[in-house]
Image (cartoon, rainbow, N blue to C red; front, side, top):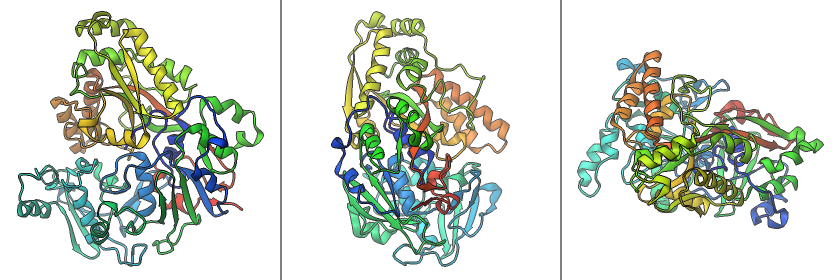
Length: 566
């Protein structure tokens, strides 16, 4: 999933996931402010009861529509309210969730038949049927919905043709025919069939994410553009959205109709505190149960007997990058992009600006992830002499004639300090004129969702949805991706990813993705920046917390182990 903030990371926590912690752990810059600067949402938390888990969303989500969402701060709210067919257990193995068992597989791995558990209901008591999952997938692919993750479903029969239909040129009857041809069918109330165009070893993992969730057609129709408000946002998951004070607070309560019973934590409240310094102050004032720790706060944490016991450090599952809009000159020039990439001092930024809270990213995937290549790639590295030579080769010696370059980012005080450092490091090498463009966090998320509004240069990132190279290379950077809006296109890269996506032999798959990874680096589609490392504080009253990269999907192993002590 996409991360819009540079240092305000992605991820969320089911109850607490690596991602949520990192969302705040990666934000950093001078800690100022105390409770005097706290938002109304923070102050409201002072009155929270002992059964309420108090988290910080960081900002207002752009959407919590399951068929439109793609950003971390959207998906963690969605996965509180909805459940998919499968889930990841504590070893990150796929196991049944709303399905009664793992699917029956036929047609050489191209047809999956799922049977739902009996007696499943939504939080309002309506029975959940296979038809709801069929609707969820067809809405996910609806060209009128234009969801960011639509391309992830293109492996389904008829999906790409339906999703890419031109609404101005396709009649209603023809559009219905395309929709009916999509290979997701409810055979009866408990049986769902999914047909793929090719075998896809990664596809079942998708059915443990938010893709294809069973949103309800009756409520989507009733609510219209505001169907995600509490009155019509009804799901089959462990929590119910009860309040949404826009730009301020979201509140959830446990769903007593959830198929395995209400989770132990009765309520979950999210504040929307954009400034990490204010969130840190709120944690110190016992108004939040979790917050990120920045470099500026580390000494205070280490020197405090209580805070040092509440401190957690662990590797994240996200990679940040400096992105380019390839439709805007001179970002369409591969030599310019290579020059900019060689001018990014990744190691210096991690050491001097993040204080070690990260790992320099010289390729897309973090070390140890499926699809990371330790020695086989010519990586992106900091090389000032090469950067200067490349810029001259591109026709801009000593930056002569190079246009002013705008660097856009999600606005808060700590991001400002970090973006100033990034811009300064590039200026010192290439002498180009870079101006900072701070954008309000929700507006920034919206900018990155459309090609026509994607800035010339920006900082964003990617967090793993499921452990497979397809989730990185194919989903993000192929030409058919509905997620990435850099407009980078490479036919050979597309062919390699397509071959890897469909290959069942693991060694051959790895070879295809390795070649694709090198093209991504050599063409400087983006300049990879750093991999996430999380520093977080978690109150001692939160019992059962554990570090789990997929915990954000609210697996039952964490849902019922996480409790609040008195």
